[in-house]
Image 1: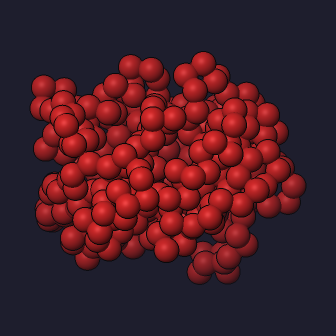
Image 2 (image 1 turned 30 degrees about the vertical axis):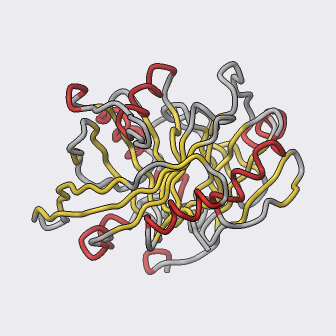
Length: 293
């Protein structure tokens, strides 16, 4: 069973995005460059991460071709419509097997995409990390994309230093895809995630090995996050939920007055404003760490 690997959060200014998430108490990896024109900075959690992404060198972007998906071109075009979550990524042990499985399920697939980039360790040492990606898209969801990610050097990628956050963030609990007719997307999402869709209030959810994929109506999203989404561009990722140790620790870690939390019961809080186009909620898992003693 696949689980959530990471979310691609796309914005115009990578430095500004880093500042925003730092103000929310997250630890970020140093900026890195892809060989195809984009750059990123990561928020590593427990087995998953948030990828803050911008176009850095547009001249290096290659266009998509027959049977070939262009990660950089897709995100460049996404930014022409606005900032936000552009892609949902699940983990993989074999990207090529994923392509075959997606194709057998009738999904629109592409050739696997392999690449490497440099990464900086907490010590300052530069190392090479490598990935193989298996993309799948749905004509009914033209403004967002999906892929699985197979890592080839996980020992260089995951570092405890980057996984410790002042806000005590732990994991991605849920991703909210907003659509007028959630049921219409159940077959694609189920084939991509490899799990069945379950009916929930206001839509459907898919319980992956790590985190849920929810597809909900605009009305259900507004009830959950406290604000409406513009549906003029069709279905899109509206927000996500991060599991934290405790809400009190989260409140202490937020350093920017612009970011206020709206409590929703004893264990959930929603950020008052979007962060680079995405609504953000937090849920307390009530786990302690040494600093909580």
